[in-house]
Amino acid sequence: MISYWPHHQAVVRAEGRYIKIFEPGGAVVPAERCAQMDVLLDAGNFTTPRILRQSSQKDVIVFSAIEGQTLNELGQVEAAVCDQEFARAWEKWSRAWVTELNGSYDPAAQSVLYSLPLRSAEWEATKAWRRVDDWLRHNENVPELSSQRDALRAAAEQVATNLLRTTPDPLVWAHGDLYDRQIIVPADEMPPGLLDFDSTAQHEAARDLAGLDVRLELHLRNNRMTPERYLTAHRQVLAAAEELHVSPARFDAYSDAIWLRLALSPLPGRFSLAIAVLAERAARELRQ
Image (tube, rainbow, N blue to C red; front, top):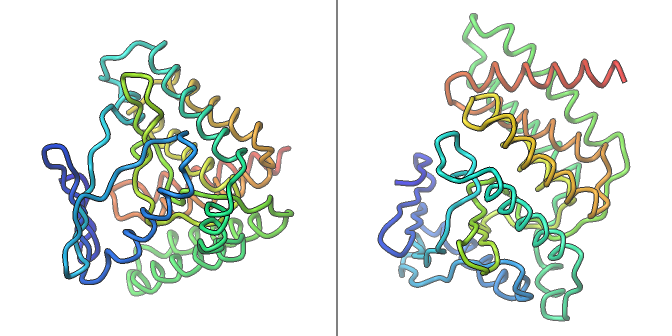
């Protein structure tokens, strides 16, 4: 079992393939997104899984596996790779990402891009508030969580303000859920692999890069990555952002939004860590 969201989705690894299980009918859009990525990412900058089989009930998709290790596996403290190999892996991803987003699309790929959902800053802020409201309703009758509710409201207001107060960057193709477990680096000269296009959309480039960067910081704070390797990966994310002309203000705004999302996770300790990070970031912004 790779991942499991009760009553929603599960991913199981089997020999040479991955099995993704949805609620009834839930595989329709993910299958469509994968077919669209075959067209949109046809330039060869990335390797993507092939659909091997779909169930007639539209609730299971079987994907081919991509050989190699994820950037997450390479970055773990106990990973048996040298620092130079780790740095090369992140540089390989960074070059491919910049090339993909800076490239030009043929008419078929443009048609796919423009058919993807639009994810504006307003959409991101609205979704953030919806998640926060769900958490508040779920915990409204717990007296012990009074201070957490106040902290969450304050953080959500700050996140929404930051998302909406500066001019958005142009919309581009976005993976929508980019983090280091979604990126595979093969041992040979094959292009990096990308997984899971369920959330792909038109979004600001800052959204994917900020999401990836926040996950790296989370690994560092949880002692799952050394400071040296964190800096190596972090610098490659920032280098990609610079080459793609991502506004620093937009990068920071989406970073805050990702931390807010992490605060709503049910995982132990995640709320307090994420709220503390958001408070640190707000205090740092006031000092600047």
